[in-house]
Image (cartoon, rainbow, N blue to C red; front, side, top):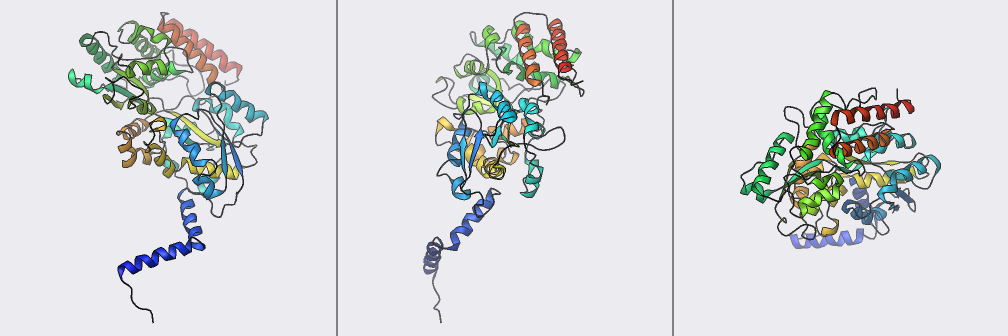
Length: 455
């Protein structure tokens, strides 16, 4: 007969059983439960496998944290026996390296790419539909723009979103409060608001913009205006249509922010993201539209001027007056090369880093400002209270933007088209006629499409 035990004795008994279990089957069961959290296979079927991941930008906060989570001695290795080698190719060289690997190599297993590069890369990536179904991955938790960029022409999902950004309007809360201004909801309101700020705050630009030629960055706000006004870059057949009446109107407005309304630094004709964001960071501008990951920098005392720190607010990027809010959503999908010999192990890695648990863990980690990053690609993560508490509420705002966001045209010629568009945009910003320049740009794009047999 066993005597009854009190509450304290019960707790001791449980602890004793846990200690014994650590030597036997209990720990493996706990490990299996943990693996299930990430949809990982139990019992380490790929133990000892090394997955080579072709990627850039190891200093990006999200990636820096994930490298530690999946490298030697990491939790991921303990769960799966798999180690992951993250490549750190410079961004400027990444697209070319991906194409070379896709067509001639067999060095890497997994790869992440920028959405606009996708159509040239997708034929060399393994379809994931069967794996997604088998592991019950909830693809409805991702923005439609992210899924479109991660899907090929046949409807095969060939990548899982890893890193993604909506466009956000950042603004100086203290200045807006002082001048009793409301954050603008449309680009037209943004111009009027910027003009008021410049009248009341001489020497400060109302809005920082970027018109320089730099990886297509001068197109981000433009496409939002174009789409919001009902225009488009290409039609369904791939023909350029950005020079129609709606395109001319949207483009003229975008250029007029600099040339006519003069609400931005004249030097913005040479600005990309670093220079234009620095205008807000250093207190030289009152507003800036850019990717949400900049929030970590705007809230970092080492990155902003003292007068700016704790005074940066955010709201959804402006829409077009009387039109739609349809801004560009950038995404990095993560897929598997068809020629990889470690596709199953690579899939375990993909499931882990794109899981809700890891996404939330990384986005809510503010212990080290150097790698703090609010980036999360799942709607559930954007709505998560802990993630929002760690990032001032910007994930929730980003989720609002992504409900109606779009991706760039998924065409294999995009890199060439982008070159035409960004150079033309810079020419218009520096003084050429908008309609004439757009017409010439359309002719150039038409020639690109014909050479590629798009139509």
